[in-house]
Figure 1 (spheres, one colour):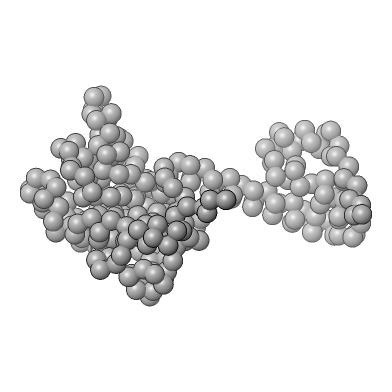
Figure 2 (cartoon, rainbow, N blue to C red; figure 1 turned 90 degrees about the vertical axis):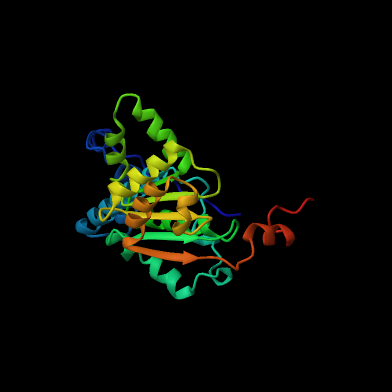
Length: 260
């Protein structure tokens, strides 16, 4: 039978109050165990302070990442942990280069275009999660959500303010362009976001069609202006010729848990 060691004694009330006042919750949580360990192992005072401050810094970093992930609007939690690099038609060298996020630092654009099920959305969403883990801010949208944003702020003429707030993000993800017909509001919103972010912020787009075909989705003049800005500093990846991930997983029985 395993005997659990006794719990470390709680912090003195005055110290607990000071840590609450200074808003140091991670030091407060870790301190009893750290103090007990330091006493038994005769740590130097400086080491005790280092460990406690490291706990606070790590806790705050993780809280910031969690907050940014919630604020991003990323929908499904698709990360590179579940990404099958070898199964993608995107060259491994290209995948690795994009995962460095150096293109985000340069305010460049990524366009991943190809048929449904070829991993476009998963790849750009995973890049979004990676960017958050690396300290960047991210916003995720579809054309429908951009159109809704446009309509919501058009009523009081605050659309410019809303777009300015959106492009504060280091990386803006726009998913599934070309999957459904584009409304006038969506076309206008897409142009406004691309125009506002041009050479200032990075955009990653997944699309069922190549940007050269955007004039099939929106008025030609607006499409030309949008694509001109979008592709000026862009990495364009085409996933044509790849079987659907979703269909392959369904055929192999990997899309669900086995029935028991």
